[in-house]
Image (tube, rainbow, N blue to C red; front, side):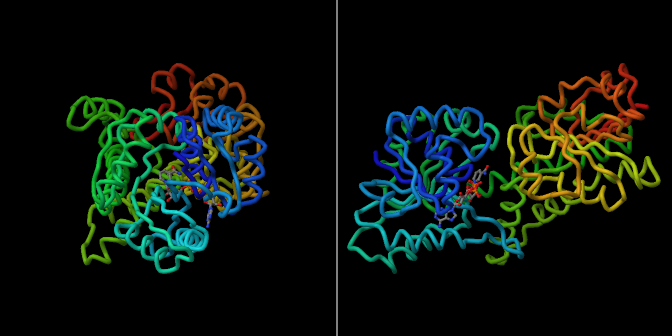
Length: 434
Ligand code: NAD
């Protein structure tokens, strides 16, 4: 198939590269000239395992191209994916500015019949809206069909997930469109769920909202466990062994972040408001997550009266491991609070340092590794469970820090490890080790 993918962010770029890997001819279109230039040089603007290899292989075999020119990108294409960002408006609803811009560009540049597939996460009803927006403006006499194909990849394992996901959801009103998309996706060898447009859109929001709820649920159980003398590790293990519950997403921590869960939970609440329905559980999930992000600094403040002049090492800035993404990362609000409290903050993240410099600028110090960040620190705070951070021995904190006081927002170490090393160790939902 000949495919165009619009938007070369985390989703668009991975989708384009993976679709080319299974034999399609793909052109990725983006309005960001710098990004397209970088991609033409075979350099990935984002950190995703395996992506550079895919780019190299498929560019070499002329199956993957990049352009900023819609006319060039759409030429000869049978299928056009939309994968631009849909951030949130101030009221929590989805901001469709980029989607609207894409509709206008498509209406002006389409010269042949195509199926338009929306990968971006969009509120229920948006695919119908996209179809109308394009049709109302079409310059040439072409027919468009529309489909929803929500994306479930996880940043950090996006390429792996595309080939090993649990399911592919495709929604459309015509069987022929569903058949065509099933054919495109056949190369991924994954179970395919066929639905109508609105159900496909809803599956994406409902899935993310459920996962966010599961995270907030275990975080609240962790907070209570601390107060009543239970250990959340044991609680989660015992719960997760129940097949009806499942062990995934039962890791207590300082809350979810990233570009999806925060905005998608708010967006579905907003969709519900428009439908005059009160989403009570999700309203509480959003509030609970907000509170959870502050919990690690609350713990520090309980332990130390003042942070004025203290050296604090912040380890892990990305919203989760294996990504350089800082969107809605708890690290942003945590470091802001530490600075407000007068602390001198030294940060380290294996992949997100460049992005961090753009956001945190010169308010914090940037270390080259964990060792430099924690050297002579009074407090170390772990915010992302990177493998490198999990493997950095607790003994080293003891050797390098002034007083080895660690606040672990991701439960990277067992309590046994903490006890054996002799550090002071505070984590989430478990007794402190002193
Ligand atoms: P992103 O911000 O990383 O990338 C969006 C890209 O679209 C950017 O490169 C931008 O320059 C480009 N763009 C904007 N307007 C354009 C236009 N008019 N024409 C061409 N290109 C344009 O976004 P993302 O994280 O890849 O997310 C894309 C969508 O996928 C969102 O709706 C998101 O909710 C959804 N999603 C994201 C993830 C994830 O893990 N990031 C997972 C599942 C679904």
